[in-house]
Length: 615
Image (cartoon, rainbow, N blue to C red; front, side):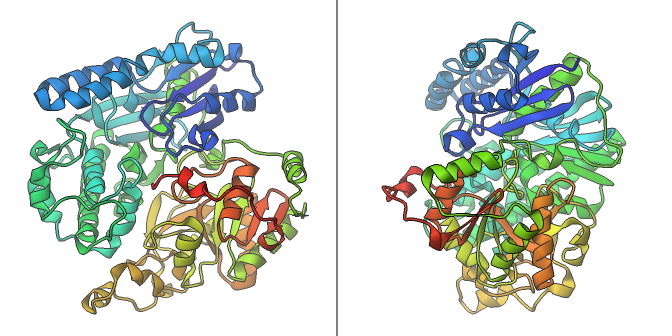
């Protein structure tokens, strides 16, 4: 009988739980989706309860419970870091002591409090942080063997690892250790450009195409020394995270001509060019590391995890360079995915359970639709309880036609269907959809629906079988983790340099069409592509297919179903509130369609924006 194993990640950011039965993923979810606190780091009681309920088991049936890192090794790093920093590291030491000695050392007690058991093994197991990342990348992948890269800020000591997966075995072969970290370098620039660390890195990536890499040589010459094999060292004089509570030092400010940008202030040419520059350097380093991984492992396949693996621009370059024949990236590549990796690692290397690779090339994460779902009965009960006007269309084809008609009319729909996605991307389970043909869709959706900065790009969701008609990419991208150029035949004349030369606002360039699908075409003609498969998400595939029947375009705009600072919606109530607080026109809740004009006004909801901080 297969073992039931619960994996847990917690206490840094994006706490999560995942439950596996042998090598089969039963359920996984981030705690933030239940608590409505974005990047919630607290012990994932709600996510654990969901996983247990989804499996239909009692807690005492769980064979093993495993935590995604080793607090004692983290404590070792903190102590040695503070000894190195001396008196300047006192504040950091106090904060770390409260976190590690006050919380992380007592994981077993918190598991007992939440579940009443530590599993049949009789104790909580612990994996190393980067082993959990490596396992999350390899075991769900469609490969029998693969090179493994994990890249993030820091685990216990490791920040970058190179490994090999074969059968049911995962090995780490090489590593870069703290304080040298590609993730912390990127986060330092994120902080310096006025965005929040561990949250705003994707903003920096989206800002990069507006700039020029004028600072790239300064970064190469002063901040990071990269060896031919991809190993690297940072010049610690420029960073503040060793002996302080900020990411950068005064030398960093001198190098880049002034203090960090104040959050929410105007974005200047400096920030645009810094974003472009760090993206160029990051991509170079990732390519160098990947080439070394190919040489060391001899594998034709690559899998990746860790926060840096969410950098879609670097991933797209890696795909185009053909360093590996095939690439698979864990969709929950950050700390949340560590819960899944810890569970799978325990299944295969502690219990030595066999691993089965699908013969049809599909991964075992099934589109990462492994979160909560709500039945037609549950949704109907919610609507009836609140007396919300609605229309039920049980026929999948007719419902898809109605949704497509709304999008084709230039309106915006909230799409809530099936199981919630595990990971930071909305992939057609909890998504906001729009018409990619309208030049002002990006501006309208950013400012009137997402309530966020207008420059931030939106992703296209495209019929898997037609991706080559729209984008220059020769592989599937089901998890929205690859940036690819819009097909040259679809582009319109546009030169960002002319906007700059004319003294215009660079960020206002979003209003100028750059292709026949302008809402998803970034200023450098790129797009963060999601290919939608009928096998993994037939409901979403049907909507896009019907949209094509009406418009001739097999692409829709897809962004996460939330507003700025809010976690992605989880329940019908979350979805309804987000729908009513924004200028969305249609809400799809499974079989049910709700139109904005039919709904009663929300009462006592005037202060809802104060509940969510800036992301």
